[in-house]
Length: 216
Image (cartoon, rainbow, N blue to C red):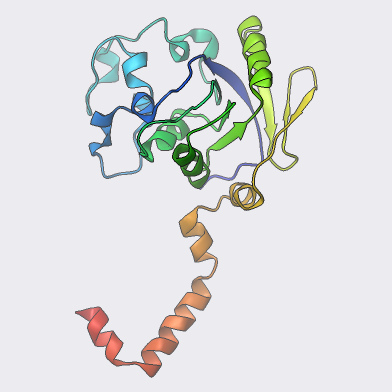
């Protein structure tokens, strides 16, 4: 998992409440058993005027010119500004995968759906909860100033605005540790691989019949 320490990026405003995971990555794209390739279909039903299916040539599809991520001023955005209850709906982990693979590193919102919130941390995506009034002010600034960027400093737990003003945020200590060190659940386990190997070797030495059972 990619580490998250300090990130500076262009901000894109998703000015909708209750954005659900089926909007983030529609159900027809969940057929893949791989963990990659979801970025091109992020917000597929909003980004395109035609219906999308897996394997379609994106170059032949019709982009929706009114959708925020299709507007040139937000091209390459890596910080998503959202309204309350972002990521509601089904529990699909593909939603943070798609956001991350599209290029987003952080999402700022007044609130998130619990499962999406947890899945984001497990996949290197930083969801930041801010007061609704703060989010509203950020929306005003993003709309007013093309090229609006923010710096997200996870080490200090502050967001730095273009004028140098800082907005404090809070991330639970264990989640912060995992993001700063790029550790997902597998990475956390592999920190103890030597102890795991030693335990397995000792167990087989004291209970050799397990070797036969494991082989079968």
